[in-house]
Length: 311
Image (cartoon, rainbow, N blue to C red):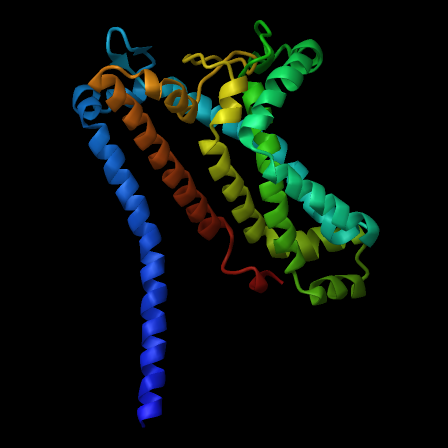
């Protein structure tokens, strides 16, 4: 009886410790939010909700608005996802379903090495290699082919929202690819065998038996990449242009919330200026939480009652 009681105590202790560790993550987010809220109280009192809808950013006159930074963050992140998601999932599919064994491991190694490159190094490469190439080759070609769209009109500077989106895409491709690859590897082999037994082609097996089964996990991988995209700082700061304005053209310079904090935090000489930057951080935290909550809601709404039930 004593041995059984000790076992029950060990189970309860382990459960309590695991619960404590899980709650510590929630507590950490709450503490970060409270610190940002406390640091931005002057800006909250002075600007209120107008802070989110105002486009002015003038430290001299102490007029601050977050709209250009929210716009730049969202647009650059969407551009990054448009580029990175197809590339990442296609790469993960190739590594899982098609690549020969002699090529698979070297490719995985290079993807992991890309994930390990510091963002400041990618930023330097972006300034001296990517941006000149974009300015001289890709952007003129895009303007020539798609110049009838407002997204590809206007003067070409090189540093731009599109350049920021491209550098973010390069940074999130390894993350989405690695997670997607593990998800695709977890698809049961019986799924593939059943599809082949029914006469499906290799593409049909991949589309029906693999991608359909793993779509929830792949969506989670994309959301993980989006979280990285929203908060990326140094590399984006170096190539996006850092101009607080809202423009329809992707060739125009922009600014992100993370970039303005990194650029101007040490220059904030007044309390209201510092509080405005804290409020930018609070908005970025809220936006990240909101995007992840919306993604979970979409997953539950459109993902169906369960992957296994679909087959």
